[in-house]
Image 1 (spheres, rainbow, N blue to C red):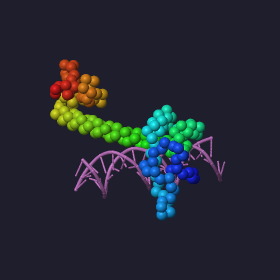
Image 2: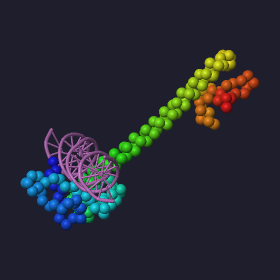
Image 3: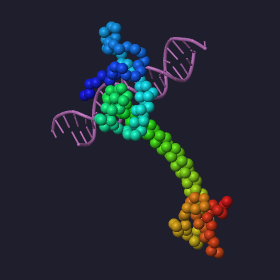
Image 4: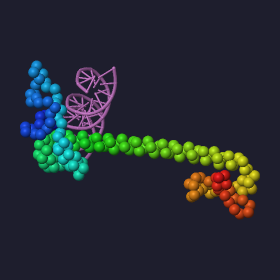
Length: 169
DNA sequence: GACGACTCTGTGATTACCTCA
DNA sequence: AGTGAGGTAATCACAGAGTCG
């Protein structure tokens, strides 16, 4: 496993520590609490800019960028790992939100279609003699291009035909 | 207002494990 | 088959901002 102390920034860096304490050990001799490094705005900006161009770095690019940022290559590597992971998580969250909304509209559509099915059933029950003389072929159930609803075409004796919901409206 | 305790969020770092050359 | 490099996923740890009594 990689055994690098990445909490120890190279001397003379612009890395901001929250408090100045260069010791590796606490006064009582125990292990020093892990300090959290914060990148400067400029470091973050350059990292971000590089990330937008390419989400992964080859060893040469990593080395060059680390030199430019006055960070260890390992720190640059970690930054890119985290950046990839977190942008993927953000993307997944956005997709999740999208699917939720899509589910909502599909549910709405489903409700409307169920209602239409009920209406069609009602028509079928209300007009059995007409249907018995002129049984509806399956092709009579079509999508109306005008209102984008499922329609039943009703054929009359004089040759005209109507869509049921046009008659009702 | 200012304070301290607490919570939340963002992010640097670590670890375990996986994949591939 | 074994190995090392580099990736992801999960998690830890800390800083800083926000909130509240």
